[in-house]
Image: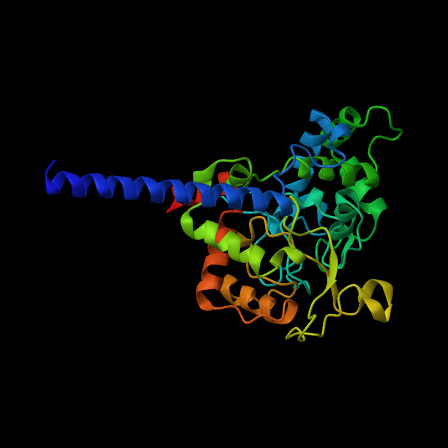
Amino acid sequence: MSIKSNAIGTLLLLLLFATCAHADKTDRLIRKANRYFAPLPEAMPGSENDTPARIALGKKLYFDKRLSINDTQACANCHPLTDGRAGMDNLPRSPGARGELGDRNTPTVLNAGWQIAQFWDARAENLAEQAREPILNPIEMGMPDEASVVKKLGALSEYAEAFANAFANDSPPLSYANLAEAIAAFERTLRSESRFDDFLGGEKTALTPQEQSGLATFIKRNCIRCHDGHMLGGTLIEKLGVYKDFHNTGDQGRYRVTGDDEDRMMFKVASLRNVTVTGPWFHDGSGETLEDSIRIMGRIQLDVELKEDEISDIAGFLGALTGKSLEKSRDESE
């Protein structure tokens, strides 16, 4: 055998060893990831009671601007779902029906039904409770009271029929509670599965090498302390600023709801699903870049000064949490 043949054989053997070593490393990472995370479930809590009629009604209500005081503002204004939008408007704070800005960043509605509670201060127990508030909020949609909303919809024949079909056993079928339940039924369909779910299921090539490195760093640096489970967050209420103060302490979080000093700067931990496409970040929308937001969180929540390559890798991993349909929409638009 010639020297050239030996060299080629040796190179092929080294490549084989390297491939096997990488595969073993990926297998170990998948097993480790499954200790802390879980694939997105098939259905949200409460969806067992949803019907096609309720979902269709909820979708119609979600996009209807007539739910606002001046017929200019729908749920979809702050939580857009068309054209590859990820269920929030990408503004630091959202304008309402009269143009006034709210005082907190709008969260995404995608996957929201799996969270422990709704709103940054966790004041609403579930999606239906959340849906009741913006319509009556003077800054958001501005309707004066529940009775005014029911009267407005009751004057529209299309809604009288739709509520009768969706809530046939209720008397009357058109009520504010049923309005909220219908919107919640629609929102329970807004499931956003990502490539990370495929990776957890054993698909080794679902994540790029950088994304895998970012996942390993995410675990190593203990980001999983708050961002774990199938939502990578959304299931805890934690203090923002454990080791160092958050740069904006004007909004004291859950304290606004309870008045309890122990709830100062307590906020619901954000889910990281779709986080790459739902900036700006933090409850006040002050996180201008994902990388800077990661840096801040490492410093104030973990007492860690993350290196630039760690931040870049973690940001890369978080990109793998973007819903596959959103990734496809964005790729097609580029």
